[in-house]
Image (cartoon, rainbow, N blue to C red; front, side, top):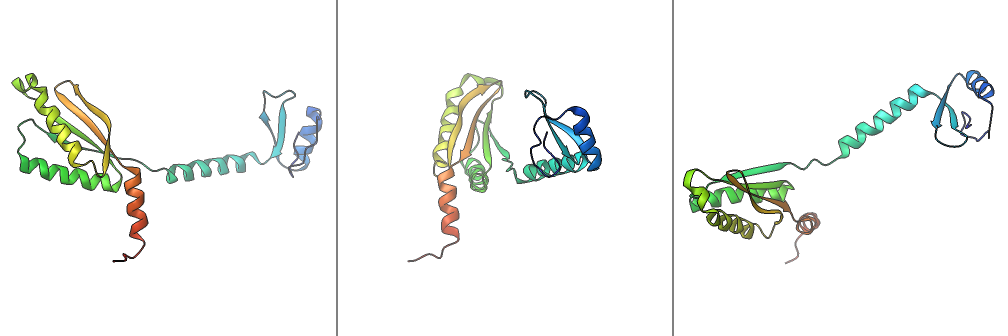
Length: 168
């Protein structure tokens, strides 16, 4: 048994442990039921639960949520429109988001997946300086997908240089 002030009381009968907890106006909580003998602690159980929930909330708040943005193209998408979409993808990757590039097929376009493969490879090549391919281009139903993730090294270098004045 562990007392209210954190000291180890050793092996104590259950009645004795309950009496110590009652005198301290606290709860007797079994913290390691699988140990031999089981370990109990004298503590304020309500306060313990509150602190545990508070830590979980802080951990959730500190978590970074990576958002997945998507750009959709067609095999017949014009070059100007593709450049516009790539510019959006570059901006999202620089912010730290993943980008899913999807080329949607219609009708007979399904018979020419090599056109979509070339387009996806072109997008990956355009964004090579800020990203890397996480999920290689593959067919899923009537579309071909590729997922790009931001380069970690590029982002760190950008952050380090952002705080320092340029010396030219």
